[in-house]
Length: 296
Image 1 (cartoon, rainbow, N blue to C red):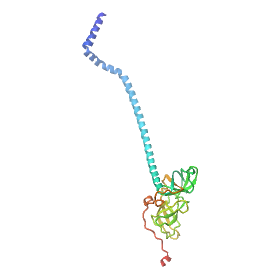
Image 2: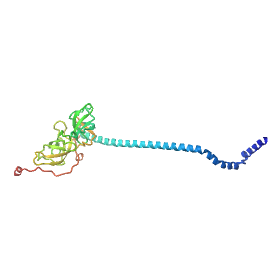
Image 3: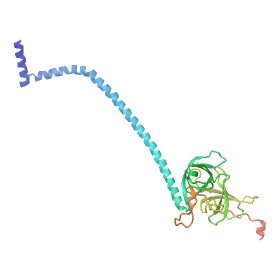
Image 4: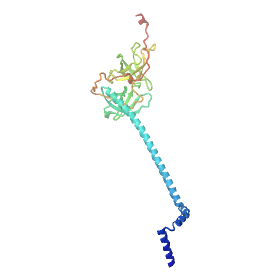
């Protein structure tokens, strides 16, 4: 027993102090490594398996979050585009309101009447906001119609194209007065009760004449796009393209009663050719000459 203790102490001294058995340890470590690696494989495989599926799950969650964020950004982008378009429309309305000398109130369309025989829309302003029956309604380009019915928080507006709606107008070029009437969905307006010898030309601009007391003078109504003098009829057939964007405008202006605001403009509304729908220029159509006129 004593001999074994002395031998152990001697080997310990030789290994720790003189590093005598280092080559032996290295040889044994190399020989034992495959056994150690084989013994640790189950634990290593479990760890790798756990990390693989955990990383895969985290990657899937990250992809789902990025896809949701991308969808949210797309929706926000669409909303921003809609807000940009709405901002442009409001700026057009604001610019138009500054060209007017009357005070105006901005309203928004709530719905469109689906009845094909009536051209009506509903706006989000009613009696609470001071809206009244017969109040003129405009968009940024011209007259849209007038308020026909008022409730507490909304109102019904009859458009220019409604067959029951007529508006007194005058031609800017010569001041000739007439009446324009709606012809229904998708149809142009019709200028009524003008004889064959009336001085009307394609491209003439029409504005409100102020007669009747509903619409102040000078609001754009439309542009003459065709003039015909049918034989056997007492009046000319004159088609007018509306100045207002009746089918696309979302925001409208309600002309408020009261004193006019002076912006230093000579006329109630400055009308330019570019503000109204473009039409092809056609030569003026002369009225047919009767035999009695030829003899004179």
